[in-house]
Amino acid sequence: MSDTVTIDRARLGDAEELANVAAVTFPLACPPGSTPEDEAEFIAKWLSADKFREYLTDPERVVLKAVTDEAIVGYALLNAMTPADPDVAAVITQRPVTELSKMYVLPGQHGNGVSAALMHAALDSARTGGSVAVWLGVNQQNARAQRFYGKHGFTVAGTKTFTVGSQTHHDYVMRHDL
Image (cartoon, rainbow, N blue to C red):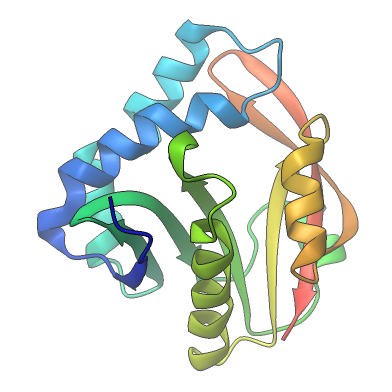
């Protein structure tokens, strides 16, 4: 197994593999009270191969993939658009801004630099795209992710809610000025 990770922009042909990675990784970031049914509903609605094809063809979105040994082991989804959620718009006032909507890495890749490489590439992509800040939502119970984002210059700017299936969760809104 190689220790080399390559970060690149995903292509349409990657949609199935991205969806497979998403199906494995999304439940890992959900708070303890999430049900498998709610997680499955979210995955089917937002993280299917068809949905990734939409993301990959949308000019306001960038999907980055992390690859080791010719397999996708993580991805990041960036949205270069004004926040639609009023709670987010109230605390993220910089323009233009990019949302780091999703960033997930397979469990076997944690701690070996894949996440850091993906984060650096995501921030570079937002900067290159003209954004002055990047924001994200992270569950308030996900201390590990909060520490990771903090290590990469994100700070808490506010709060918002996030719906997974029938459950409403509470997220921190974190911001990184570029």
